Amino acid sequence: MSDLRYDVLTGNTVIISENRAARPFDTNIDKNNLANCPFCPGNEEHTPPHLFSKGTPWTIRVVPNKYPALNTEFSENQEGLFCSENVTGSHFVIIDSDKHYNYLHDMELKDINSLICTYSWVMDELYKEKAIKYVQVFKNYKKEGGSSLEHTHSQAVSLSFMPKKIQIQLDNAEGFYKKNNTCLFCEMLKKEQEANTRIIMESEDFIAFAPFASLLPYEFSIYPKSHSSNFSNMTDSEHKSLSIMLKKLFSKLYKNLNNPAYNLYINSINTEKASFHWGIRIVPRISIQAGFELSTGIMLNSISPEKTKSILT
Image (cartoon, rainbow, N blue to C red; front, top):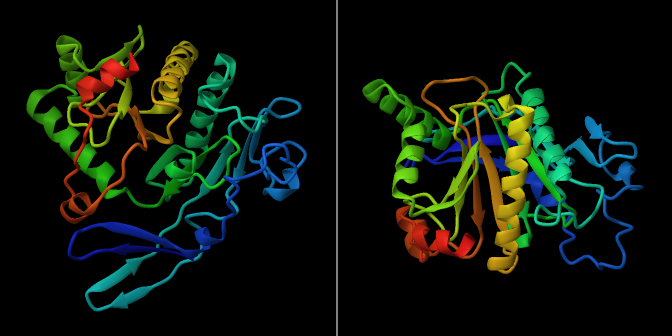
């Protein structure tokens, strides 16, 4: 059972999903014995039947998560100040590769391109559910990044509500557009190009840079130069261009930061809006939130975005 709860004091939103505690952990698996990995070829019976696969035999699979953050059972809870609401959605696992250790910094360009196309397919598939308001595709790398299984994989979660953090971005972007008749994100990219102090990498189609107010050390974002709100609307040419950039960036991340844990997530919506611009954010897990950050919500970042540029270029 999944339960959406609101904190009346802070306005925070929490999904209570106790079945997530039952998911297996194998981050200390014996590298000489992968026979028990549920994501490796030959062990397909350990996952639900696939919803999508590529290749014969397969090179990428998409399966329902056996331990989903959300499901179709609902609860009603009214306790004075405290309340919870029905929440539904789907939770998919994207098995990035048939090879156990084929992480982004190891992948060939064709494999990264195939993965990007699969992300698009998953988004489109999840948005077919009429109740769904938002879909998040993300990747956790290493235990410190929140990954419970070592085999290279990503995840996708659909939600029957718009997350507050995303809604704030949408509202701020819409307000900026109404006031200035231009996209806030496009203007941000223009300013970054003019300053050229935080740009890590740039191609004909995409730009990667460390955000001016980066929350955590070495985090960076990737945005398309052409305005687009929906990740799934990329062309084949843009898929290839993004694959090349991701390959270069994750190779640098692996080499220059000594293979750190990280989170990758895609901010995208299902429609094209003049005010919103999709993007990818990569956050290495170099530091942790301590007392000040947890109590105030203000992040302390020990690495400037300008230094991030010098480390990752």
